[in-house]
Image 1 (cartoon, rainbow, N blue to C red):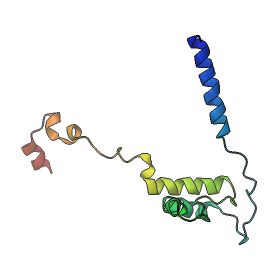
Image 2: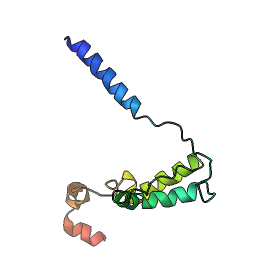
Image 3: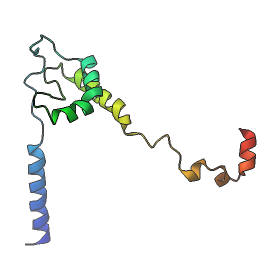
Image 4: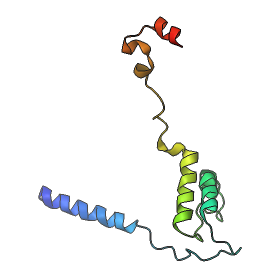
Length: 119
């Protein structure tokens, strides 16, 4: 097979696989659960906080879910993702760290003794 045709077949196969993973509409959005509650921002935030722990527990218990399908939509999703970001560090763990070359005062022409005097 020609390389261009092989590439086209590969791209079509990958697009088909990815399209099969796309989420569908939430049929329970805005519908109250068995306790007459529709999850909003605050419940989403809480469930985002506890999601990693509930995920581990759900591996051993079949009746646990890490996401409430009876939610109000965007506000629940925002709270859930915000909670996950807080627990997971927001994906910005290395931004506040300096490398050894950046934190060394000798790299900018100041000796260690001079930098100690400025502190």
